Structures are given as structure tokens and as C-alpha cells.
Amino acid sequence: MQLNDRRGVALVIALATMVLLLGLGSLLFTRTVSEMQHSGDDAAIVQTLMLARGAANAGGAMLGSSVRNNLLSIVRATTNTTSPWAYGDTGSSTDQPEPVSTARDLAAVASQLQTVVDQSICNNPPVPDSGNATVDLRIYFTNTACGMPLPPGVRLGDGHFVQGQPRTAGASSYTQVYALPFVLYAEAQDGRYKHNIVAQGEMRFTLGRASFARYALFTNVHATPDGANVWFTDSTLFDGPVHTNNFFRFYRQPWFGGEVTSSGCQNPGDERCEGRFRPGARFYGEGFIDDIAMSPSHEAPSYTNRYGTHAPQFTDGVDWRTSFIPLPNNNQAQRDAAINGGIFVNDSIRDLYLFTDDDGGTKYQHIQITVCTQRDWWGNCILTRVDAYRYSDGGYLQKRDDNGEWQTVYRNGNPLLFNGVIFSSGTIGSVRGPARTNPNDPNSAPPALADFAQITIAASNDIYIRTDLKYEARPCSEPPERNPDGSVTPAVCDNLDAENVLGLYSQEGNIFISDHAPDDINIDAVLMSARGVVQVENFDSISPKGTVYLTGGIIEYYYGAFGLFDSRTGTARNGYSRRFIYDKRMAAGLAPPFFPTTQLDTVRSVSIFSYGQREQVY
Image (cartoon, rainbow, N blue to C red; front, side):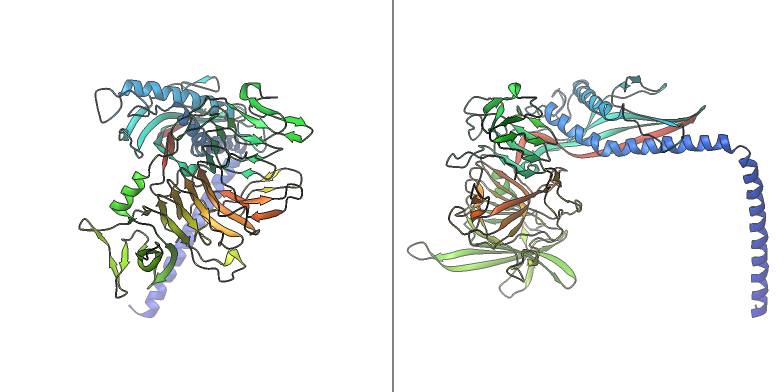
């Protein structure tokens, strides 16, 4: 075909296209003029359609946010913690709970959930921006919501078991999935026009043992090891869950952004309460007040005396009678995990160094472990060995050989996919990350954990933190702040999709922030001592060293001290001050690998499944 022929064909196609577009434009214009004659009716129909769909979307968002949070607290209060199954009787099958009793137990969950959902939305329907339109939103977990029955022709199924494993004696890990059917009803009305949407589905929730990592602060005895009282004061700002098996003491107005719970045990033991339970708390200048005698209420107690007003701020509620939660009595789960899929050191570790780098375009998490191989007559180490490991995201563990080459680690004849656990049967004398590029600037410390790394460092005895330990992807950037007017600005946590997480766990010893650690140290980790404390080494004798900036949580038997302050001036005399940010990812179910768990159930995840929906205009 000649060039002119091709141009001619192109011109014909272009002209035909223009004719077609002009025809369509004329048709659309004619139709638009016709529709404008009915614009009043059509506008109302379209508005009710959009408002109903908007309300349905708002209901769906609630299912994944506030309803999920309410479900979490209800599950903790209703699960059977001694049976193989969280809900339902054992029955004759070992693969699932008995269906009728499961439906019965989940009906109780649905009833409680319905109550809190109704309180949230029944008197607070979505309000259109303008006009006379109205919107109605209801979420049914039972046959009645907001005092209204189910829509005609709609049936709500029974709660049921989906899948999972039964608990076995002494098991610390299991998952069970249950489902709660729901109906979402959204209706909008504008004049004589109505549009409603009815969606059906089920909320499936996965249960497992709650990790101790979920706490911003946990104490078994809320006092120091030498028996000194610990008081929460105006400088106390915790924006995550706080629990003690003992009881709290309050001075002025400490602030709590998460739930606060206490068991009220007057003399906690290792695995149970060795004394009597007396729910309540101490208020400065008032003594111990039983929860039922608190004024004006046990939800918001407040006492004013010559020392000021003592009114702790519980922004997410308080429970003075929660279950006693024993700390673990061994670290067998972490030891087994390290033997089977981690790094196991049947000795003390002198130094454990974490850092990340790129090699040939691949990012690696590095783990360097220094152990003593020879000691002198007095037990001093005179010869050491460094074992260097690394792994990439989703990759297998490698170890550096004597020639400096990286070799894949094999265990039981198979390449080892690292499970994240590092275990020492003794003491870990140093856990550290890379040195600061500017010794006086804590922000100059490079990350110790790669953005994909998830590690638990466990030891039978003491663990010492020597330097900054920072995540490459930090979930939070600013701690909560007390404002001049007394209000509190919560922490800034705007990277909650970050995956890196670190846990340090000592079973019989303490976790110390070394007295040789730098000033203003950053620690991104969950720290746990089952029998001791998390505290600063020689806190009462070292010079002031600024602030410990912790992003994570602390779980400890006794309350550990970080420093001493002049009670008259508030200035530091020794050690560190504290500025904590609760890692809110822990509340959503994230935890360091094989981190110790409680005997309480928690909702690890929630999924919304839709069976479909119908729309109706009338």
C-alpha cells in the first residue's frame, strides 16, 4: 500500500469517528434534556442510593475497627481457658468442639457484642451533609439490633467453629478459628424515596494464647525488689495496656492511653496468688481504697487532699478485678525453638552483635555471637570465638566458615529456615547494635534490625544492653506528651505496617541497661524478665545519663528502677529518665517469635467474609 493510500484510509477512519462521536453527543444531549425534566425525582433516587452505600461502607469499616476491638475484650472474658476448645464442649470428636454447645457459647459472645455495637451506632446514625435525607445503619449479630428485628426474609445463622487445633496440656501455642454471622442493614430516605442495602456475612476470628508482648507494662509485684513502693505520677504516660497482679499506687494525675488492669493480689507468688485478693488501689494521702468504695466511681476515682488531686486518667477503661496472670516458670519453649530452628548456645554469650547490610543487592540481617572457648584458673575468659550468621528476607540461615565464605546451615539434613530465636543457657553479657556515627547523637545510630527481621533473644540468666538497638523501619516517631494545660497528646505511630520486631527475654535473671551504655539511648524492643527486673545497672550510683527512649514494652516480676531524682526540683541525680512509646503493633497481634504467652486467649486476627448483598429502591 502506498503512503497516500494509507493517509486516505486514516482520513476516512477519522471522519467516521467524528460522525460517530457527533451522533453520540447528540443522543446524550437529547437524553440529558429529557432527564432534566425529571431531575427532582432522579436526584432523590441517586441521593438515597449514594447515602445507603455510604452508610454500608461505614458499617463495613466499623466491623474491621471498633467492632473488632470490642470483640477482643469480650473474647478475653468469655473463653474457656481450661477446656481443649475456647468455645463449645469437647464432645465425642477430637477434631472440633461439639456444634450445639459451640453455637450456644458463641451466642453469648454475639449478645455482648450486639450490646456494645448498639451503644455505638443506634443513637449516632450517619448524618447527611445537607437536605432532608435521613440515614439508618444497623449491624445484627443477634435477631434484634437497635430495637428492630431482622429485615423481612433475612435469617441469621448460628456461630460456629471453622478450623483449628485443640489445646493440649501445657501447650503455649495453638490457633482456633470461630465465626459469628452478621447482617448489615443500611437505609437512606429522601422524601418518598427509600433505598436500602442488606449485606450478609460472617466475622471470623482467630484465637490463640495472648503474648506477653501485648503489654506496655506488666508487673507481678508492683514494687522494687527491695520492697520500695512505686507510684504512678503526673509524669506517667503509658499509651498501651498496663497490668499488675498486685495493686497500683497513684499520685496526682498519671495518664493511661490503654486499658489498665490489676488482680489485687496482696502477696503474689510465682504461679498464683499466695495472699488474699483485695481489688483496689492506693491513693496518696488516702491509703488503700477498695474498688467498690471508690469515689465518685471505680471507673474514674478522684481524691483531693492537702497533697493535691489524685485522679488517674483511664482513657481506655480500668478493671480492678482481672484474672491473675502467672509469669512463665521456664523457658523450655524458647530453648526448643532455638534447638530446632534457631541458634542455640549451650553456654553464656559474651557479645551478641546485630546489624544489617547489603551484599550484591541482597539485604541481610547479621548476627555475630562471641563465646568464650578457654578460661584461666580464676574463671576469666582468655580465648574467644566469633560465630557469624546472616539471613535475608525469607531466606535460609548462613554461617561464615573459617575461610570467610558464607555457607548454608543445615539441620537434620535440611537447609535451616531461621525461626528468629537465639538462646543462651547462661548470661548474655552484651547485646548491641552498630555504633553511632556521632557519639553524642542517638539519631545517628544505624539500625540493628533489618526491616524484615523478627528476632527473640532468650537467656536463662542476665542480659545486658550495651548500645542503641533500633529498627530499620520504626513504627513510631514521637512519645506521648503532657501539654501545658494538663491534656496529653498521644504518641505518633504512623508506620504500623512495619514488620521488624525484637524481643529480649530472661527467665531467671534480669535485663540490664548497662551503666556503660551511651547517653539518651534508643531501644526498640519488648523486654521481659520472668523472675527479675528490667532496670538500669547501678542506677543509684552512676551519673545522670539522659533518657531511655523505649519503643515496645516491659514485662517484669518486680518494678525496675532507671534512675534517682531530686524530689524537690525534679532534676536527675543518677541514671536515666524514661520516655516510653507503646508499640501498637503488639495490640494487633504482632509479637517477637516464640515470645512467652499468657494463659489468656486473644484475638490474633479478624476477617470479614461476605455472602453477598441485595439492594432495594421503593
